[in-house]
Structure formats: C-alpha cells, structure tokens
Length: 88
Image (cartoon, rainbow, N blue to C red; front, side, top):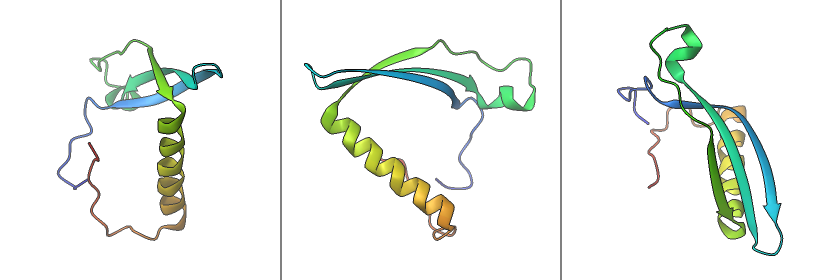
C-alpha cells in the first residue's frame, strides 16, 4: 500500500468466531467490523453488519500462510521501506 491510500471507510475486524465442517472441508467464519473512523470517535462513521464467510480448507491454508508471513514481517520490522500492493 502506498502512503496516498485512504483508510477512511475501511473496515477493521473487531471480533470473529469460527466453526468447521469436516464432511465439506469448510471453515465458517463469522466476523464483526467497525469503520476505522469509529475508533477515533467520529459519530458519522459507517456501521457494518456481521458477515458470515465459508472458506474451503485449501484456501484457509493459503490464508494462514499469508497471514503468518505478514505477522512475521511486522514483528521483525524487516520491510518497513517496501511498497505493498493488494493481491486481487
């Protein structure tokens, strides 16, 4: 992400619950969000409904790997000067 990216109106994950289906190889994720502006006290921040997402086991494994890579990078402070892009 570049420094010109806007964070206003972006959702911030505040809580989640999970369940799974061994028969379907699925993980069910229920997530709750707030608008990032709500965390600084703006009264007109948008509210978001909880969201349920089904994730196939293969995608969940990729997600865990990518999350761990990002966590390791943040904790080690190794790429502070690297420009990051969303993968779509």
